[in-house]
Amino acid sequence: MPLTALDPITALIVIDLQKGIVEYPLIHPFGDILDRTRELIDAFRAESLPVVLVNVAGRAPGRTEQGPRSSQTFAEGWTELLPALEQQPSDITVTKRSWGAFATTDLEAQLRAKGVTQVVVTGVATSVGVEATARQAYEQGFHVTLALDAMTDLREEAHEYSIHNVFPRLGETGSTQEIISLLNKRSTTA
Image (cartoon, rainbow, N blue to C red; front, side):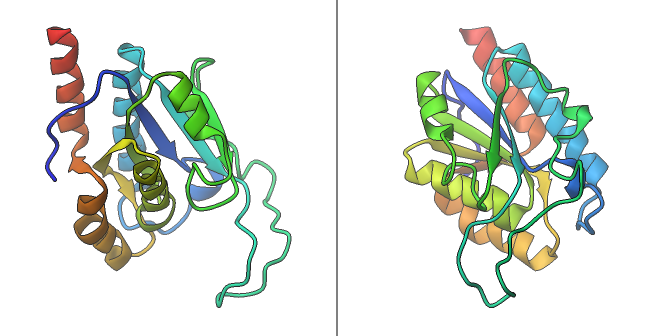
C-alpha cells in the first residue's frame, strides 16, 4: 500500500545499524542506508517523536538446518550502535536476541507507554530483522510503514521478495523523502 499518512505519535525503529554489520557484503552501499536513516532520525527528533535504536546481541534458541546452536559470542564492539546515529538520552534502545525487535524485549510496552500507534521501520537486513520487526509490530496492532530506500540485505532476491510480497501485506511503504514530507505536512497542520 502506498504511503498515505502518519499517526500523531509515530515511532521510528532503526534495526541493527551497529559496528558488526558495517562490513557485511550488502546489496546497497551501507553509507547510503546510514545517510537516509540519519535523515529520518533527524526528522523524527525534530518533531519530538520516539526514535528506537535496536541492536542484535544473540539469536533465538532452537535447532535450525544451518548449523549447531552454540553460545554465540561476538567480537568486542560488534554489538555497539554506530556513533553516526548520535544516540540521545531520549531514544529508546533495545537489544534483541531474535530476529524481530518485539519478541524478546519490552519494546511494545515502551511504545504503548508513549502513546505510539504507528511505526516506521528501517535498517539491516530487509528479509530478517526489518521484516521480523514489521511482522511483529503488525501483529501487535501498530500501523506499519517501511522506508524502502533506508534498508538493505545480503541477498538481492530476499530483499526484493520482502519488498514486493511481504511488506504490502503488513503496511505502507515509501521513501525516506516521502516519509519526511508526511512528517513536515503533519507538523504544519497541527
